[in-house]
Image (cartoon, rainbow, N blue to C red):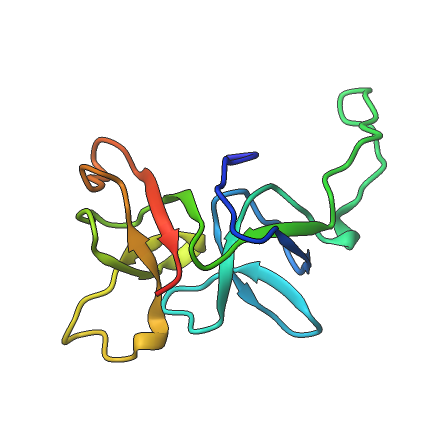
Amino acid sequence: MPGIPVRTQGGVQSYEVAENVTGGQVVEARAATKVGVAAANSTKVLGVAIADAVPTSAFNPEPVNGVLNAAPLPHRVGLAKSGDEVPVTYAADATFGQKLKAAAAGKVTPFVSGTDTDPALIVGTCTEPAGVTIATKATGLMRVGA
């Protein structure tokens, strides 16, 4: 998802990225005030990327197939935060209203009460009206925040 629609409350804050980030991925805090794609079960989630971004070191001015792209991706990414509703990629089926946690590669998966004991794992709530069945459609809406 190169760019995603977002309903924000209070504006978007941006952060420098430590690695390639794609719009719609769950993002976590990294060292030196940077952000990166959230790992599974991360408790450092800051929000969801609303656009693509690459680290400063990723700029490569070499031509590709004889064409030089003089408009590289930005090195900062804006994040949808608590209360914002955004489309994300699910790693497992989820029902409408179910709490979610970070999964690998910046995806989300259901938070399982009783099994997942740390409430800091909750990154959002499934707001896709019919829920998400990844066999038919792996993306769906999530309201960011516990």
